[in-house]
Length: 109
Image 1 (tube, rainbow, N blue to C red):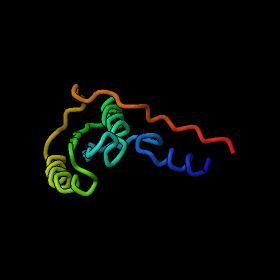
Image 2 (cartoon, rainbow, N blue to C red; image 1 turned 120 degrees about the vertical axis):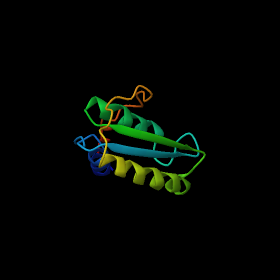
Image 3 (cartoon, one colour; image 1 turned 45 degrees about the vertical axis):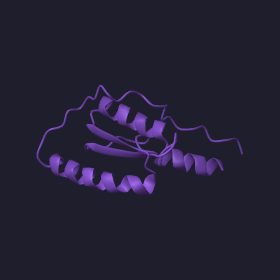
Image 4 (tube, rainbow, N blue to C red; image 1 turned 135 degrees about the vertical axis):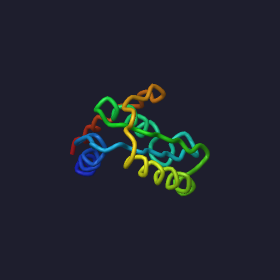
């Protein structure tokens, strides 16, 4: 189990580096957790602008992972087209911090 925790901790976005490209983040939220842990997604959206990465974030309330895909892909396509043409605003006052994205300590073996 400690190896699994270390691998997943290393692979989590922003823990081992920061993208240089603008991020489009969509999160289906059919319950308090979401299709990906909503507080982790929120933290990624919050911390990225502090690292100079523009972020556009959408929450798809009432939609699970499958249902969130439809609006996500439409909006992501429009986002990609804008990336080719327009400069992005780095800061977003409407995105507050989530939970820490620091690595979870591996359990003792």
